[in-house]
Length: 234
Image (cartoon, rainbow, N blue to C red; front, side, top):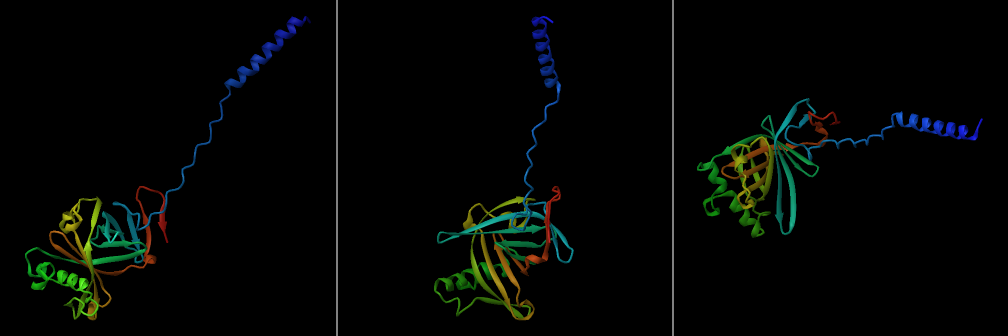
């Protein structure tokens, strides 16, 4: 066979092999696997997320308030989660408090003035702050009677907050962008039916009193987002 034919056959064979290789489907690069979403916790819950409790109750987060207070250069942060059943879950670090009942003290009423009035007129908050400044609050605590026991004021301050979710109502709707207009205070029950009760007060337009008890983290059985297949359960 002439050499020219051999060369031509070789060229045609190589060309056919290359053409066949090009027609084969190329292997697609492996798709990157997205990391699984972080489990939801009370500290990361968003409006619309669900909590389940030890007694099989479930509650949906309606509105979340992310709050902060700056005092002497130190910033403290916490969350208030307004649940669809009317309760409020407070999250401070790993500590949870579930406020199960509330009372609204409307501006202009005697109950409102008992907290908001000047110290000389019997206003509990200004009296408490005056005793704190004087270093006398430990020996002269500020308290008021309730249910056979009494509540004792433990702290007060102002806070800034941002909210997400369902538009808040009442006191929550009047939380201002000016932190000096948002007052909070905490109190504890002593004796009687209120012994061990933890209280929170929020003062914007009116005063809202919330009462509850510490919620052990183990009592929160699960936190999850309805549109997410991942759930955090215990």
